[in-house]
Image 1 (cartoon, rainbow, N blue to C red):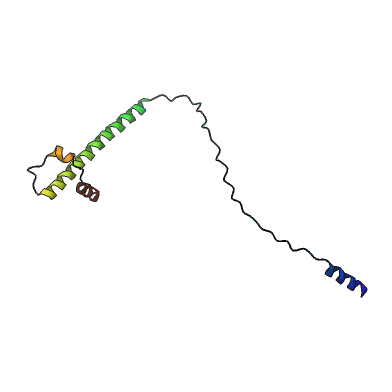
Image 2 (spheres, helix red, strand yellow):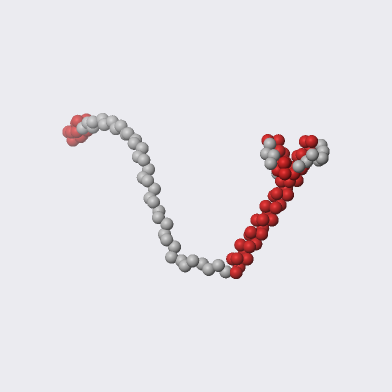
Length: 113
């Protein structure tokens, strides 16, 4: 029994101090992103082939035809606006209406798209 009493005494005599921790969270700024330098190209400049020239010519032709189609569409849209607004085409001036950028005309062009 004496051994049990000694153990109990030892257990009762050991006391752990109460420790309180306070954690303080500090937000550290993100490190700056490393600068990435472009690697200089070591390739030789490519030579323009006849196919490249033909492709560029075709692109230029398509761009000009697209600009012409957009201009025709704009003209017809302005004619329609003028006809619906004024009910006759006697005083219609295509150059004058091309310069018209009124809110009503913009509304009509947005609704027709």
